[in-house]
Length: 426
Ligand SMILES: Cc1ncc(COP(=O)(O)O)c(C=O)c1O
Image (cartoon, rainbow, N blue to C red; front, side, top):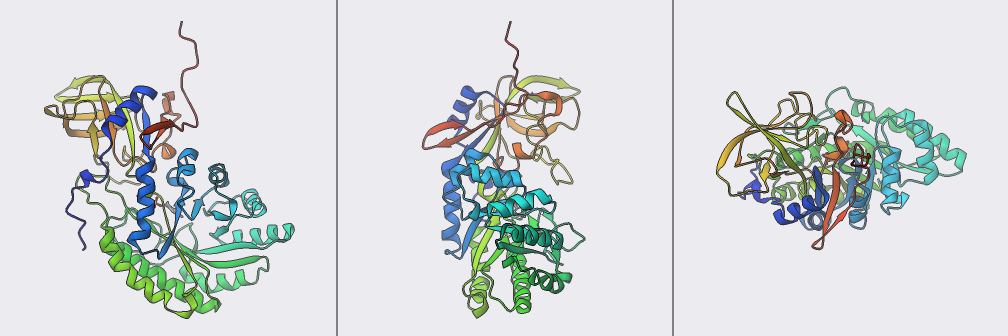
């Protein structure tokens, strides 16, 4: 297995501590802070890493904050939306419909109708039902709808956090049914099949596993094209690039990944059928995850039967993933910092949220510099699947605000103040 660089993961995305403290002082906690400058630099870095072989599509679901999307809209080639509301978010962020792809296995007919009417850049077909519906709406509007077919591979390498392939799945067309599906789509006159899409697994820190997965993708793309006999305009690689959530994780080694992937991509592009194809990496967490933090305050200290609890104002209601409830089999302590007192004497703390359930546990016996009531902590790697993936209504604590750091300034991009108190203080 290819190892990541020797740099400790700790260094990957050390926050600007003063900026987080200043943001918390101004906006209160819990607070999500996203470092837009570093997110933008990371998106740009992909061009260098892969020598311009791939364009980039940002998966809106990973962080749909409109302010954040607007901050990266000029750098990404596409936004991938998985609901019509995400299509609207991308547009509200300044992205034209033609640069939006619309994926997701449960598209309502009304969502398909609106997407076709708007002229979204492409509809990612997850089923023949969607193909027929899109064809019908395109006919009704007197237009052709660009589509890509999502293929669900029969195999996926190990070492991905979550995988959606190699088993019964609601996503895409099973590769076992690829050719008949292509024939069915070819018979729909109002669809323009631009190419193929595969997203079969997420969150891998192994360059080998991702490269192996891409080899599975390219084999399927070749097979599809052998059947259609048409050069595809577009091939979407659901990248699956992971983020080092746990202290012992090493970041994905992008140099090693590039060395493994680029020759295979060059071989594909050298084939006449693929020489004009545009390749796209579709991803979210690797782009925005490491440069976001959830900042939370210690509301209370409590010692119970030998355990030092620190009770936070953020719980799984604000960050389901960090609390281990988004696809993890076993909850593990994430990378967490004491922002207020980084040089204090180390102690062992169990960090819990404000919810009335024992499952609201963020970290168990985590070593941190002395942590007291009123101190602030930051949870690393919170830029993706943070607020958006959290059940913020539970127990009606104030929903976190969201802030962007940009050019040395901070800007609030909060979209809702759910559960913020509205009664006058008397
Ligand atoms: C179709 C599709 N594309 C892209 C993504 C983004 O994945 P990640 O944020 O892990 O890069 C997902 C995540 O589930 C997805 O389902």
